[in-house]
Image (cartoon, rainbow, N blue to C red):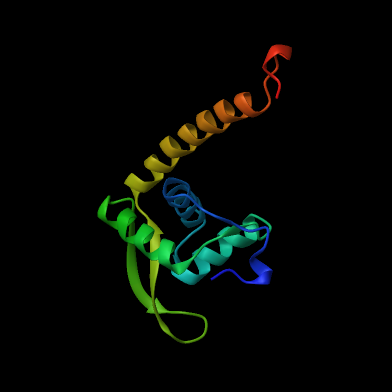
Length: 120
């Protein structure tokens, strides 16, 4: 349930979350909570990463072979899975980033048309 501090925050769509997880893991291995916090901080706390979305996304990325994990201990001395990008995941990150750039540009053209006749 959203709280007052969640106002102005945006939940992520599935494909977008996958892309941001891959991008975050490009910096090195991280456990789930650290991935979520890195995405939130990187967006100036606009994007909200819920556990109910994060862990299914991590499992999906493992199944695709884009990430893998090792068991380890977190900074607060708890057992954790540390996820890391695979070579296949690095290639997919490039593909997904290119798709995102194309999509964002297309949406931008619709939201902010250059032709005077398309304003509303």
